[in-house]
Amino acid sequence: GESVGLHLPTLSVQEGDNSIINCAYSNSASDYFIWYKQESGKGPQFIIDIRSNMDKRQGQRVTVLLNKTVKHLSLQIAATQPGDSAVYFCAENENFNKFYFGSGTKLNVKP
Amino acid sequence: EAQVTQNPRYLITVTGKKLTVTCSQNMNHEYMSWYRQDPGLGLRQIYYSMNVEVTDKGDVPEGYKVSRKEKRNFPLILESPSPNQTSLYFCASSPRKRVNLPTGELFFGEGSRLTVL
Image 1 (cartoon, each protein chain N blue to C red):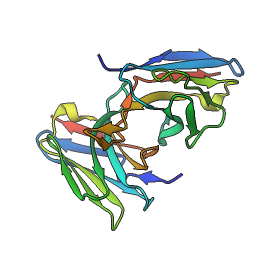
Image 2 (image 1 turned 90 degrees about the vertical axis):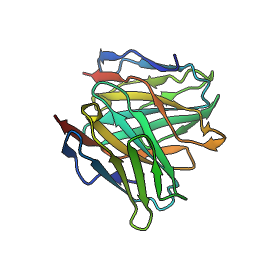
Image 3 (image 1 turned 135 degrees about the vertical axis):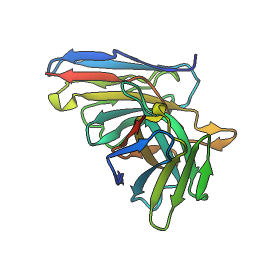
Image 4 (image 1 turned 120 degrees about the vertical axis):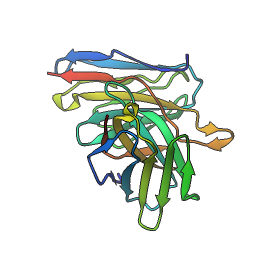
């Protein structure tokens, strides 16, 4: 299968700062990308998605950027809060059938 | 409450003893899938189902079986479990469409931690 990787396994940020989590993907045919958040002991939870015909999408305190030229995806979290501490996964998808997940980035928010 | 329910949540078993992990969703979703999560490997797709009686292999289907006889249920069957199937398993479902646009948004269960001795 295709690989989806992350640049940093662990990211520590100060409460109130902005966080940026990066992700590289390898399948040029992927047309849909998703970010998930997984808190300890729970299943992953959908955060935001973006289609390949877009390069930016904003949600509440989160923004996803897609750079198809370099096959790079990022998740920006504004004013990071302690409740944002979790593992974040990016996933790529083609035709909404098979999903390929990265290995995850752990976000630690320091008070 | 809209949810995906997996059972059991925790199971310790022995090599070769057949087991089934059940998955049920109450959101009338057409799409369901199973994943295993291992340290450093993230989530890997085992099987998925686009609708009743339609199932397809994911990336790591060896040693697993699934069935989709009803829309709400998608059990994962390990006919002869082996220690390399020790893992954390997640079931997920998807509506496939949100506001008339295709979506890959997955709703995950809480996970089933399986240990095979």
